[in-house]
Image 1 (tube, rainbow, N blue to C red):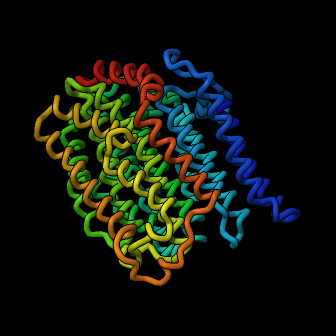
Image 2: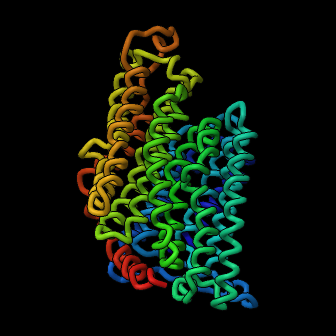
Image 3: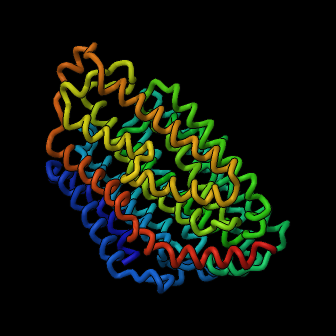
Length: 488
C-alpha cells in the first residue's frame, strides 16, 4: 500500500515521458489518470486505517545493512491526513490543462514530486526520510525553473539553496543520533536518552531545517519569490503540501526526540510564531501582487501551526496540537484554491497585479462567487475550515497566556483586511481595463477543480470530527511522550 503511494506516481510520471514519444495526444489524460489512481490508493489506505492501532501498513526491508539503514514504511494518524492532502492537491493540479510547452515533462514532474512527498510522510527510517526530503527539491526546482516567470531562475536557485542548506544541519543531527543509538530508525531516536545540552543542539539543527520549510520568520524570504515566479500548479503544491513538511518535522522529530529542549525553548518558538502572525500579516496588507499577498498570508497562517505545536507545555496542550494539525490541512485546501483562482485570472490576462483588475464580477460571476468563498475561508469565517484550526489555537493560547492569545487573534482582523481588500479591488468596482471587459467566465473544467476545493474547505469547516478522530490517538501518544521527557 505505502510503496504504491511512493512508486505508482513516480513510475507513472516516467511513463508519461515515454508516452509522449508515441501518443502525445494522450499525455494530459494519462496524467490525470495517474493522479486519480494515486488518490484512490490513498483513500483505500484511509478506509482501512484504524486510528487507535498506532503505526500501520508497515513495510520493512534491508536497504544498506552495513549502516543499519532500512526501507521502512508505516503511517499513523499524523501521516494519513497529510498523504490525503498531497494526493488530492496533485489531482487538482493534474486536472488543469498542462502548458503547451512540454506537457509530459510538466505532469511527470508533479507526479514524481507527489511520490517523493508521500515518501516523506511514510518513511520510518531517518535516511529514507532525508533522501525523499532532499529529492523532492529537484522536481520543484524544475517546475519553477522551466515554467516559471521572468525571474524564475533566481527564484528556483533561492528556493533550492535555502531549503538545501537548512537540511544539511538536520543531516548532521541524524548522524549524531545514529552514533548514539546505533540505528537510523526514527523510533530508536525517539527512545534514545539525551542530555539537555545534546537535545538543545539537536533541536537547533532540526529548527534550521524545519523553520525554512514551513517557513518561519525570519527565514521566510524565499517563499514570496518562489510563489511569484512559479507556475500555477507549482504554487498550489508549494503552498498546499511542501510548507507542511516543516510542521510534520516538528511533530515527528523535534517534539518527540528533544522534548526537554522544546520545553526550554518554547518561549522562543512562540515569539517567532507571533511575529509571523502579526508582522507578516501587516506586510501582506501592502502587497500589489496577488500571488505575493497570498504567499505572505501563508507565512502568517503557518505561524498558527508552530504556535499550536509549542503550546504543548501548557494546560491546553492537546487543543494546541489539534489546532495546529487542523490548520495545516485547512491551509492546504484554502491556499491551494486561492492560487488556482489567481491562475485562472493569469491565464486570461497574464497579470497578477491587483491594479490591472477591477469589475471582474461583471464578466465572471461564477468565478467571483467561488473566489469570495475562498477569501472568506482565508479570513477565518465560521463554517469554513479556516475557522476551526485558528479557533482551537486561539482557545489554547487563552488558557496559556492572555497576551499570546491577544496577539494571535490579530490575524482575525489582519486576515480579513488583506484578503477582502484584495477581493474588493479585483472583483468589484467599475471596469477600467478593456481586457477585463472581454473576460470569459470559468469553464466546466475550472468549475470542477475549484468546486472540489470548495467542497473540501466546507466539509472540514462544518464537520471536522473525522479528521479529529483520525489524528487524536496519535497526538495523545505524542503528548504523553513529550510530557514524560520534558524534564530531560
